[in-house]
Length: 346
Image 1 (spheres, rainbow, N blue to C red):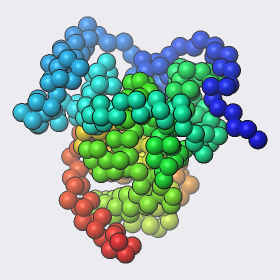
Image 2 (image 1 turned 135 degrees about the horizontal axis):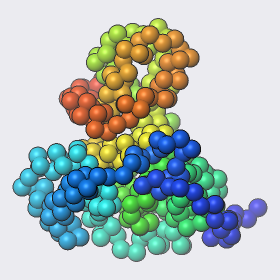
Image 3 (image 1 turned 60 degrees about the vertical axis):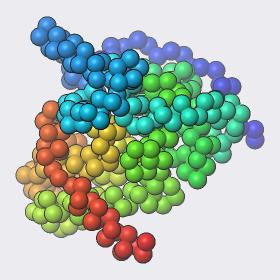
């Protein structure tokens, strides 16, 4: 049977217009959308946001021209600003600067176009099957075979050709989809390359390789950290036979972009791209710490439900992220990695 490429499909009908939140997700029937805080800004908040944007523009310069110089001179200021959140209007550019993807793109002119147009991928049917499952409530991805789904297909297909050892795995769609909401196809592709190949931080490709080797390592590390930071909860999880693979795998595979409120995912990604994967561990620990006193009382079924449905208070980035950033994990993560490698004969 001949494989039909996505360009050969006719776009489906446009979805009926529905109210959207500030990020482009269809608003839920209830007033509080899970993808973003929808209340209007006061004049004071608007002015404060404008001042923040001006400060960031000064930091990065025109097209990012001042960024590297500013980071070298003021690393602590940059770290603090990123932890407070990148202004949404500048997020796409800042993400490319802090991930190293802008440099990779400039070194590879024409490569993305070559991968999309002239190469074929063994994963094409799998990608076409999965794209409608990526952010289905976002206006950009709602039209079947529409512009958003085509862009997502192109990025994922290009990566599956660029790195045939990894190819395509379903969770990658959420990474690519999130990036496409803030940048062009080509920019999103090279940022995906920067993440998986480790342009700035440790490579992430092991999250998607056969057997998910990096997921296994991260879950081991997370389990140890959780038991060290919250021994009572760790003991309760052991008694109820709960292990991190039952609730935390998606946290690492999609960097919280799969089932968490979008406004929270964006703030986590700001820090993730600048500081690396340790923020995923820290946010995971902070979530458990926030709900600790309730979780230690729950039996298995209710525990599993609670670990997939965190309370609204825990989803506030201005509450959760300061709690996460107060948890120190860097040194212990390295020790646990060595322990894991030794245990697995590496």
